[in-house]
Image (cartoon, rainbow, N blue to C red; front, side, top):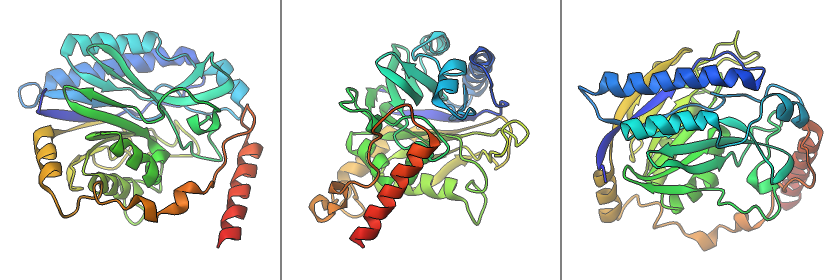
Length: 331
């Protein structure tokens, strides 16, 4: 167990990809960033965990699942994750990849938004976004798949501690991050493409707000990498960056200056300190003190799983309206 190490939040600034043939060049650049970060910081810090943003490999720029599957989606693992595995073996590091648009032969007419955790042993976990940014994202959630056979919230026990991850919009749902914490996560990774105006600049600095809140309420480190792409590269959105590392009391340990562009920030992760605090605390122990039974809302269905695939903007809006109607009836 490496009890004290450094994590790097690495933000990218690629133009919007239009075809899967463009993924290789993005992978090449992220591999360069990994090596530059590990070697460049070596005289100062032992960088062992490197995190990349959502849409680093591909983004949902087309208006149908069929087009996404035809032009951008790939199987995961793939030749790109193989390159990250090689670097993880070379340097003994762990890499949370930027997301892929994923196809899986087990699920027809479906695209997932997927990130994988990679270590020296290879691919350690696959996380598929549970809360796509609706109505614009046509990715399926594991929630939309009957009898989904994988754990939607994988947590991996590694020499860096117990690592979990969630993607972008997932972080606006405290239940999602809470589940990852209750699955044992000590470091919760955020892979994100969080656009303006909900970035790192007041008065709408949701990026910083939710990263800090989720860290404090779950007594966990948060390592959060955000997109730094420009408006020209990703119309109609610009991406404010602000990648950051937060400790288990919600303190910002390091943060990139808000604004577009490639940036890397590093900060220490002290797993021994975290475990000691979790063990000794009586006050502000929001995991142990959760009064589960007094919160019945989680037993009431809100957003229903998808009844059919492929997803479309229309079917997503129909499900949103049904959920709104249910809420109004209960109020």
